[in-house]
Image (cartoon, rainbow, N blue to C red; front, side, top):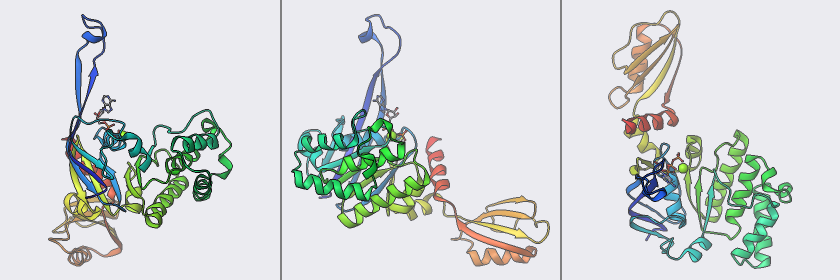
Length: 322
Ligand SMILES: Nc1ncnc2c1ncn2[C@@H]1O[C@H](COP(=O)(O)OP(=O)(O)OP(=O)(O)O)[C@@H](O)[C@H]1O
Ligand SMILES: [Mg+2]
């Protein structure tokens, strides 16, 4: 059986509406927000899986259920053979969790104190604690931060400390909910490299939620896409591409004013002497399109590329919103 398993998981939040009903707070109307309507997924040990979807899709809800923080209304969940919310203590000993939007460490105390509190909570032996901390401190480059209260750290510094805190008990599973949100390019890169090494060298299984497609492209061979609480796709990035954006994009710099669109071009946008066109390589192979374009008018320069994954995902989200 896979390490992480969800089967037909459903979750509806019940929220009390605003204003005073006839019976005070309890008389207010209850509004239901369906966050997950039957999600199934399965992740084997050692995988690094990207988890994406538009705002409100149900990603954080899924991560919270897998962490044992939230109990679903229906369906089955097993993580490392346990039902997260039933065996919470043993469950949390085996997982690490980072919510990029929220801290898991203590706000007002130096980071090292948080680490020591975690050592006590997880009952980590002193020598194991020291060696793990030394490793994480070095890998995440946080030696200079350990004596600073968390609230005085920048977001990027804090995130590296959060990662250290989530791994101090050496979990085999790491659940990350937007660990790179708000980080600058350099910090993002560092966090990415750290996650990659953790997965490759130590075999830690990672579920990575992010809105940054560069994270996904850099790290994940498999992506799970969720929208409106339902699974939209599960597979390699290339599948997302073939399903939602099979076309390629050609940018052509003509020597003079551009000619009218050539046959096979899906779109044809001219700006000065430059044209950006799209085509479907399945029906119109790139060499054929290049030949047609060059035959239409003298060409100075030309590039062909796949649509950026950012754009594909935006398109997919838009389609879902319809
Ligand atoms: N505590 C809550 N009470 C009521 N509704 C909630 C609560 N948490 C989430 N929801 C609703 O459940 C749905 C799924 O939310 P969730 O936070 O799981 O989405 P998400 O995919 O993580 O989105 P984002 O990309 O914005 O983080 C949304 O409609 C949200 O408004
Ligand atoms: Mg979220």
